[in-house]
Length: 278
Image (cartoon, rainbow, N blue to C red; front, side, top):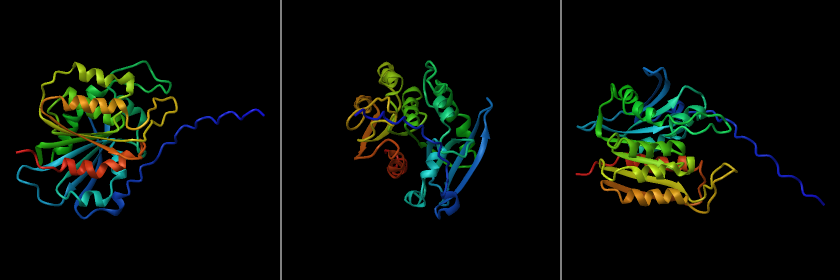
């Protein structure tokens, strides 16, 4: 008897961002969101969680979160109540969805490569990181007292790749970096090549890399592996050898790729809220 052909893989459907935290509210923070336009004609949606508590003398620590729509969609009041003096800024897009797949494919990838089958343009990370440390930072911090020594950056998947790219390409733009399940597999592990070419000297920074041990990617075309992604573990080992970096690795047992996003939030917020080293 002839076996049935495998069912075709169905594309994932876009998921709306419920952003329930804006409806329920939270006692420790004021929540805001607004659209901003850059001088180059880009439009971003900024999500803010501003502490009600008075800022420390030097200003609030501030965690920037890429894919801001998805990040704030996953945030809960409990997350914010645990860090009452930490400010959060989600850098998102003008969409009702959790992800703007086209925009993030461009903004979070460092080099242009031949168009993928989906036709998404790549190679905009350098310009995006410039915006993040420039115009977008000015928009976020215009009326928010921020400690410039306690800025942190978080990103998941391709945004985790961009977080590492920011660390290597613009050291000093942030004090702490929290890449989650970074897509180091992208473009034949291009990021490992960048690390190898980047001088070992640079600004001091703390890095918290988080990933699951059951990710194996969601794309049936691969790449696949058993356990935690080996190229991410290699990147962690390399970063630990770089002077000035304090690197921590956290592996979530039995979590797949999508599940590491919400799992990373509590440790990332606590990490961003740490006092700077004396």
